[in-house]
Length: 111
Length: 112
Image 1: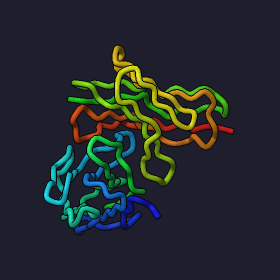
Image 2: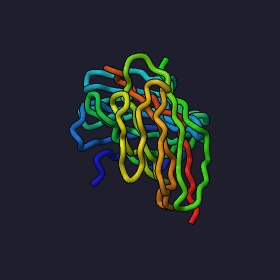
Image 3: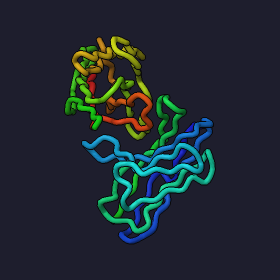
Image 4: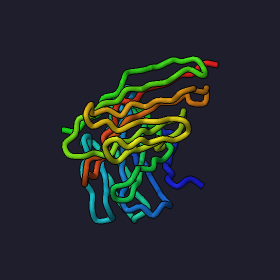
């Protein structure tokens, strides 16, 4: 079984809809991250969390919110989706000072 | 701020050719450097890393040497295979840092 899982893997939605992307991990890591990937732009950090009570904004947090329900779960929400949020979204985990482990990604299309 | 610049792709090579993907960085202090690889339809996975100057990271025939004097961490492989076709990301994490900064990625196509 995968160590970092994301659901759904693909989602098509309409402008103005609320969307939640979920991430779960079995690696026991305390740190979790949400990234957005656009062609030619690499990965941009949306939010990160060092533990259940610690949530921090990344480079591009506007239009997004997160919830750390447990050490193993970190959800990303788009309160009112817009077309320029169409992208590939990745969740990642790590221990302090260590490499990051990525989920398989969620491809989101906002029409 | 910290940044990573890597060569634009796509890079197209024939099987058994030599590969170099250039990566340079800007950072304060003493960052750790990474190469991640993303195969089609998958998330990123760590390929190799180096944590201090002159360290060489290596894995699966790929190598990269941490060059502080040129602020570079170029990825090399002596003989690529079709299965190496993927997107390669150079990244850094600064000392005591909590964020990893990624380059834009370089897509590699290897032809049989």
